[in-house]
Structure formats: C-alpha cells, structure tokens
Amino acid sequence: MSEQLHVLYVHFEDGPGLAGEEPEQDPAAGRPELLGLLADFTPVVQALPPDAALADVRGALRYFDRDAPGLARLIRLRALALYGTDCTVGVAVNPLLARMAAQCGPRGTVRVVRPEETAGFLASQPVAALHGAGPATARTLRAYGLDTVGRVAEVAPATLQRVLGARTGRRLHERARGIDPTSVVPSAPARSAGSEYRFDRDELDAGRRRRALLTLADELGFRMRTDGQVAGALSLTVRYADRSTTTRTRTLAEPSAHTPALTAVAYALHDALGLQRARVRAVHLRAEELMPAELAARQLSLDPREEKARRAEAAADRARRRFGAAAAHPAALFDAA
Image (cartoon, rainbow, N blue to C red):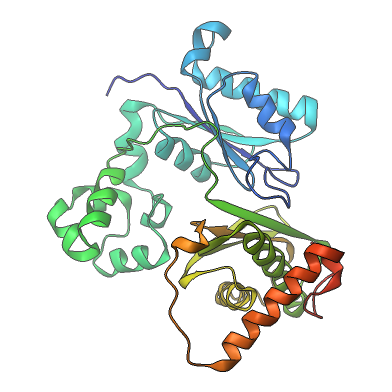
C-alpha cells in the first residue's frame, strides 16, 4: 500500500457537540464554528454527530505545505486556541482506519496509522473496536475464538459468511484487513436526528436519567412526526464525569416515530448498561436510519389501546404545533432538553 495519508477523523472532546438539540438538516447546528474550523482547511468535511467529523485533506496538503499529521496537529492547536476545545485526531488512508486510530489512542492526541503499519495496528485490536461490528456480532465472533481483528483477518471469507451471513461476513473480512472503499462525503443527506440532555450535576439517580430519556424520546418523536419521518434504529450515548462515553444502538421492531415505542427502546438501552454507580454528565439519544413515514411498513395491531394511543398522540401534536411545545406532553418530562 502506497496511498498518501489524507483522511482525518476529528473527535471534539469538549463542548455540546455538533448536533446540539437540532435535527441534522444542518449538521453543524450545535457548534458551527468547529466544522467551520475544518472547512478552513478543506471543503470536504462530513459531520458525524454528536461530536465528530471526517475530513479529506488531500487537496490541502500542498496548499499548507504540510503532511496530513501536520495538518491534524494544526487543527488541534487552533481548536484549543480559538474555542477552548481539545480534540483527538486519527490520521489514515481511509475513514475506517482514521476512526479506529482516534478511538484507540489516548484523548487529546494525534494518532497516525501509516499504510505499512495497518496490519500491525489492526492485529491486536479487540474485535469490538472494528467499526461495523456491534455488540451482538462481537459476541458471536468471540464465541468462535475470533476475539481480535487480526484473527478475523486470518479466517477465510467463506467461514465468516457462514457465521455472520454473506454480506456482513464479507464486509467485516475486508475491514479486518483495513479495506474501506467509502469516501468522505461533504453535506451528506441526513439519516439521523439527535438530542442531548445535560444534567446540572453528575447524575447518579437512574430515575432522573430515565426521565431525561423520556424527554428526549418525546422531543425526537414529535420532530419526526412533524417532518413525516420514522426511525429504524435508536442510539443512546452516555457521557460520564471523566468525559468518556458509551454508545449502544438497537434496531426497532418496526420503523416508528411513536413516542412510547422510542421510549421503551431508550429505557432498554439504558438498563442494559448497568449504570448503578456511574456518574453521568449527559445522555444523548439519536434516531437512526430515518426514512419517509409513507415508505415504512407497519404491522397492523388488533389492540384498540394502541390505536387510541396513536390518535391521542396525533391530537397532542396538533396542539403543540398550534400553541407550543408546552401545550401537551407527558407529565414526567423535564422542562427542557
């Protein structure tokens, strides 16, 4: 491999993130200055809400007379000097390796994975660190003794396809060898919408965390219903007092913008983390795989309570659109997300 380093994965460590509380029609809604900082170096910037972005700096190397690691260090310096925001930057030849470099290194640094270092870098990484290998996939692979990315790369593709399915097995085998055909896509169409709740103090009370999740689910549901969209999956990101984060994603039984359905999945994601003694600073809920509501298949329900709940929700939405968000909402909501 002789490709030039040109992809940066930038994770902003401080601040409310790129998404804030607005839908991703404008991916820089929450902190536009941070994406603007990257845009000063290259127009090829792709926001990854809530607090990261990809940048292709291939066209900027000659202009700034620096290599990609040098640009990464300059970006980090400017973010600190101008906005008081530290960032961790991964530098590599494709988005997969750049993302893993940033996530596997210490925070507030520039981590470089050169082409000749790819195999060695990936070999010892846990399989869960491989982008695209979710918790269920990682558990399946570990059950077969494939607990590192290096071991996955050594397995025949046909074996992985039998274990994980043809498409997933083929994709993970390529990624385990550092192959990622995707490119940085500026202004990519939004396929997600998110909202974050920050606690006044580090929160230990599970009841208050669940109340915050209800607030976020209600906000996202109302936003999607207003826009005529439904979500196919829901992601929960928990930010702790030490600024570390945990993210979990779960696919919905069927695409939905129904607040009770979103809330149930959010609660399940939260409870599965086992945060009994965790000091939580913020929770971020993201509706993934958005699609037009009219294109989503919906299973008919014979339960009259379900239909009544949806009619009540539609009536509440009409009141909120006419009189404001405080006109009708679940009683347990916080005042604002």
